[in-house]
Amino acid sequence: MFVSLAASLCLAGQTPQMTELWRLDGLDSPESIIADGAGGYIVSNINGEATERNWRGYLARISADGELVERHWATSLRAPKGMAIHEGRLFVSDIDHVVEIELATGTLLSRHYLEGAGFLNDLVVLDGVVLAADSANSRIYALSDGVVSVWLEDEQLAGVNGLLVEENRLLVTTMSAGDILAVTGPDRTISRLLTGLENADGIGAIAGGYLISQWPGRLSYWAENTTRSNDTALIFDEVEAGIYMNDLLTEGERVLIPHWQPGEVSAWQVSCGRDASTDH
Image 1 (cartoon, rainbow, N blue to C red):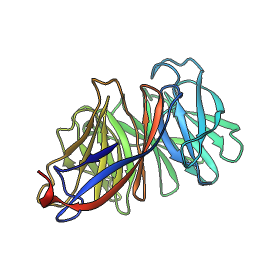
Image 2 (image 1 turned 90 degrees about the vertical axis):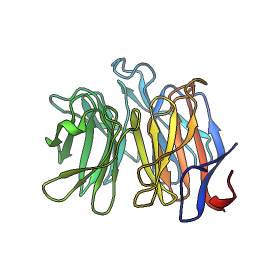
Image 3 (image 1 turned 180 degrees about the horizontal axis):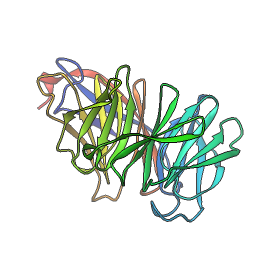
């Protein structure tokens, strides 16, 4: 499958393109994917509804070329979603807990209860601190050395979902207003970069801009600081086809996308080889 992002710019005069590399099926409500640091990936599988607390959730390991390595690598989770790795440990959001797992073995080490949390979603590591988006309460929690605190709470974070650490800022997507926000400085100032996205979910940097998933089944591209910086290009709209997506992972020139339905992970190559003037 080949998709051209003709409505937006990768670099001046170029149009990004996506080519499917592989697709793995047979998963159970996969929500998020992370590189495992050993050449493969870990996929969180909710295996039910997003808030069901059924203890059937699990983490699967897959290879770089999309082969299932170990389906139930870590188990006994309620509804696992976002993941982050720090100092040899994997942290996983699990509704109102962050679960800490030994990366080398998949052994569960501890469950950290985040008091007041309603729907923990994406996780990242910023300056050695694990940050957790709470989509239900317009806040971002911090977990450091087992200590939990509220890192940022603001009405602009309503429906906070995706988190992306950059050199001098934290990018945040929100589902309520469909914003992309930037959090900067020691006082954690919030700036709105883009608005109007419907149900903004995952975000990843690639091709001179950002890929943004929009629940349940849309994928868009946005380039900041261009003459079209208020525009996004719709790449996929697979809602009617029942192909859903949540988080996404960009690395180099590739993007990996978990599809909640029908239980798949897809991998794509992104390139900027065509001149936009040739698109019609």
